[in-house]
Image (tube, helix red, strand yellow):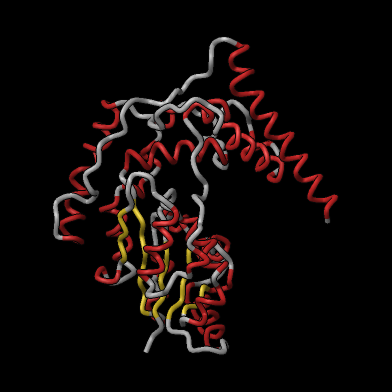
Length: 329
């Protein structure tokens, strides 16, 4: 009998990092439950890059994973692989061979498209891996949303169904906030594993910055700074963000939100009917009320006091804490 392969494919901003880190952290306990998180790394992005670039095949990877699973001291009946960038591939057929070696169960987490776009914009500003998106204002970003073809969930589901039995596709519908803890718990339930009590303190991974802090950060070309220092700046901005006056997190105005949702309404409904036998893909939820601040203070002194100084103070505190830690060790 073939082992089950749970292939977690994304999408981004649905607690993927929390799932991956928990799977890696719980590698030993999961083995005891018959689950092998292949290669014991959080995320398998390098592996899937090699497959899609043609440097290795899914068949070769499958054979290697099977050999590793056979060598484990306990019986293994489930394998897990995870990389959210899989879903950014228009052609998934390079993964079709997995079904020859495993009982293939793709897993796709989805989030309502308007909410996903708001979250994805802030993540692009925060991480700045894509030069074409890293410093855009929100309206310019929305003009490029055609690039994110994978949030047409009906078509994405159809692409996945080309490599796996549709009845075995795990479609997980997330709520408005894409909470990491909920994502982890649902993934463990889906693969038939028990999430240890000690692992249930997972914090929100990769939380978005506020609209105002995002606007502040997008003016800096962080991509030109070495990753360790860039991460430090990002962390300082997250700390400073907590000092800002609370404003709504929404970036879309009501007209924009309605337009975006209308563009996906037909596909969402057809997918909901096909998979869940209902008309609504997402649970009814009120759209966020109001908009967060998407501009910097016009008064230079206010900007320095409310944005620049809190970030500098957070950086100084982080450096102090690191020095104290080094001294103690």
